[in-house]
Amino acid sequence: MQTTDLALALYQELRVRGASSLQDIASEMNLSDEDTGRCRDELLSLGLVVPTGPTHDNRLDLDAGKASEAESDAVTVIAPEIALLRLLDRERSRLRNHLDQADRAHRTLKTLAGNFLRADTLTRDAGVEVEILHDYRRIQQVLEDITDTVQRSLSSMHPVVGGREIFARALSRDRRQIENGVQVRSVFSQRLVSLPDEAQHLHAKAELGVQVRISPVVPMNMIIADEQFALLPVNPENPPAGAILARGSALVRSYQALFEHSWHMAIPFGDQLRPDQGGDGLTEQQRAALRMLASGMKDEKVARNLGVSLRTVSRMISDLMQELDASSRFEAGVRATRLGLLN
Image (cartoon, rainbow, N blue to C red):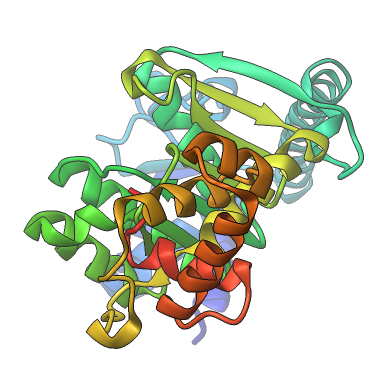
């Protein structure tokens, strides 16, 4: 017989007796211990029997989660209609609790959205907000928050990198972002390549799928997420002084432009510069002129600063382009940066 049929037969026998030892009745019905246990569990789950003893269990206590008189094998029978009403009452109570929880969650979300959620995180054309962060733990939490919320792209610049613990933490974030389909790009200082630990970290990032480039000049630490968040130092000369968290695309787009400039001036990590790329024969005057031109200085001002004529500057620029094998001033600037001539 099926367990339900056996449980029904056992229940009918219990109804005749009202209260009795379950094991005694099971023995009379020639039920195995396994069948008896299954029948008992089913009848208890349906609320058709209640364990009883010398003092008899109070149903309200049982519903409240109090332990029954488990030391006794005796049970007392409950009428099916009573069991059904109690089951419905328990379900109504459970649903009321769920509804109360849902109402509380709704009120919490409404308060959060109405009073605390910054509108600029929801639209690309929103205003800006700046938060100064001094606590290291808060800065780390912001990094974790950015990792969890970035959807499209993460851009970063790093003049230096941290210790091994920071390496592991940064790689963990990189892995989560790559797995979520985020484009991750990072520019690191060229001098880090000559340091074994830092170079190993760059290799690990590249192996994860991070696009890594190196540059002779990295102005400051900076992290940009989806053009909505930017994290940068309060003082680039003193990183431990704290960080600035900027929100809002109106401001963050400017930082993104700075990153894109650095990105295009950098070279992919692992690329080797060939000796025949030129730049070894520059004089100090030519190097100075190159640095001034790279900063955006006009030819006339370069001439004044060097104490030469405008024609001399023009000839110098022509010689620089030839030395660097560049067809334009912009290309000459890019090659000079890659060769480290602007340091």
